Length: 164
Image 1 (tube, rainbow, N blue to C red):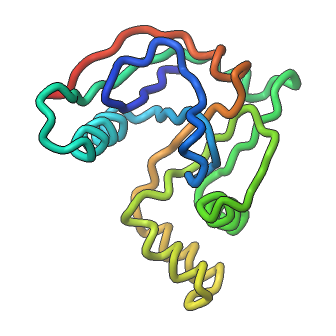
Image 2: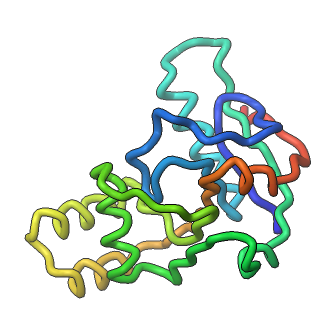
């Protein structure tokens, strides 16, 4: 399985960043199977750095043996689309309230377009079933996140390229 990671630098050896705990699945190294999604994330991260001409938008490409998602050696979780279980997990993680022992998690990305619906659910304006129905109207990109050093070691660097 080919995976992509958008950043401002080439990442040859994936690591878990300590300061990024309030993300969809918690602190981890995030990838996607969608090249364009990774390119957008690389550009977003570059833009956050401002007008620094030394900052680049870079996509690092990895190979991953997807059979490991079913291996009993790793504690994995797979969310099959936008479900109530996924929604509650994302909301809890974004609040910083979830601690888990998963090595690898796969599921949809709760991007900015989806977050308005998620916020309405979180504040009680929408119930879970209404929120899920609204989320299903959006194109859901996938993410595969690695939450332990051992899991990060399963990613084999292939190449990186800069987005111009």
